[in-house]
Length: 410
Image (tube, rainbow, N blue to C red):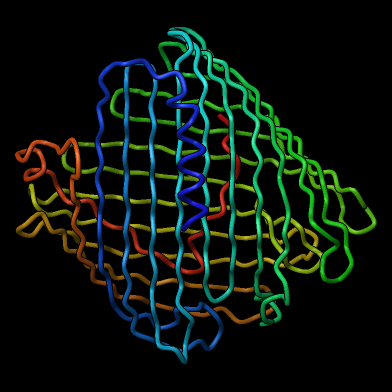
């Protein structure tokens, strides 16, 4: 926590260094949630044991804005506790601090500091990131350029061999630069960018292989609003060149992201697709190609209640290891706004998991939750809060959710 506070102080400097003596609008809110339930296989392995669980979530957001600068802080924390004979506690924590200063009406600088950590049965990771970005934004065009440094510590179980964690995590740094631009039309925004990265490990891995490599990733991206339909996506060509091709073969893959949102009265529909490249510590594999497709529909039954259904398919391909894990998840959830602005929820879900070389298996989960949002500063009008339909908290699955993410390409 001390490191996160230091990151917040450092990131605040560029946003306030040349602040004028004008009024600042400050808003802040926190959301606290409790959840509990029963999972038939919380660690998602063949012949896994069932366990009840209890957990908590905490999020905090703060925004300070003046006419020429902004400072935002966002922190999230969550943990689930299971029977000690079935699974260790699973937790994820993150904090992001971002400051922006406008040097001119159409030109600004943005500094970002973030850190996150994740601990579970099969994965332990910690990341710290620093980014400096320049944006030139006009009515018809925008251009951007950024440099970024990320330090990572990663340790994963070999789920295909049912192995344990490595004696020591892999520690590596990723140095990246991103440059691009986009044109704005009546149909939306369309742009190109180029991401260049160098990944350097602190040492050879545990079997003596050299994982250092360079990445080149040209990218096309867009976003468009067609009536009520919102579309956004990207298409890129990922090229990884390893320092030692004796240890790892170079990789060339087409990656993509896509999202469609469609509200129709009291019903809303969202579809998401992605194929991204992630780091891994598994033997003979430095990168995993993760492909996922998500569908979610929500219907507002009344001003105080909503029901939803969701489905997800996900596949992780451990390149070089010729090993694949596939899982899909589906379920329903219901949310209701209780007195005192509390939101209760009930989620029922089933999932199917298949690790290459092992039989597939089914698991299930029932979860109940209770959460409340506290407006600390700049609170919304009471009437708006009272009439808003509850937001359904998404279920968290060990195999199907991950804090790993690809670098921003836009």
